[in-house]
Length: 222
Image 1 (tube, rainbow, N blue to C red):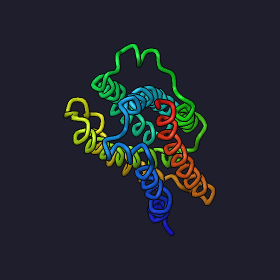
Image 2: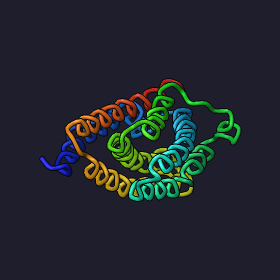
Image 3: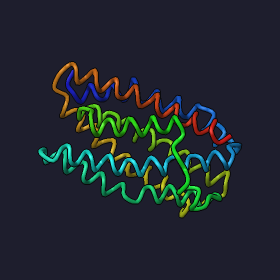
Image 4: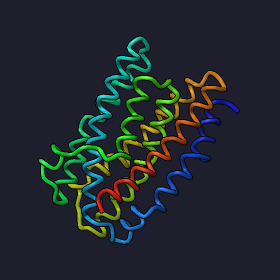
């Protein structure tokens, strides 16, 4: 099996089933039914705002770590610049559904979201390139899919429009490109059976983290 075929096997065997499990969970089931509380929607906005701010710092760390490798340095530099507006887009959504600026200023990560951010920082500081990008491939695949769900059902069930939902419309498109870039980097940087194991483990970990994140938000913002 060549590296690209291996990456496709990870997508099919780990990431896609993870996305399906996320969509079948109670957070998105209730969103589709119009029964998800505004408080739980606000919880996503706050927690994702905090995480997106951490992502920017993680990209900056990855740029420094990979300054000797023009390919990786340019990749993380481009990712940093593309992600710069995303915390504010998450905040804009939250403000549209009743949060105030001080809600974001006073917020701290819940446990499950702290695990997500911790994994992101680990990937930037200690993880191998294949771990870092396999984690991104998994995460962004899931974000791309759940952004479609948010965009559809927040309009249909909660009456929100384009300005409030820009985070989701951006990620429905941008993360398709980001996942393709991550898949390409993973395939190019796999050099050994150990790297293949790291890729599978990283994808499995991120699926568990994402599922736990939404369950954590559901419980913390009951």
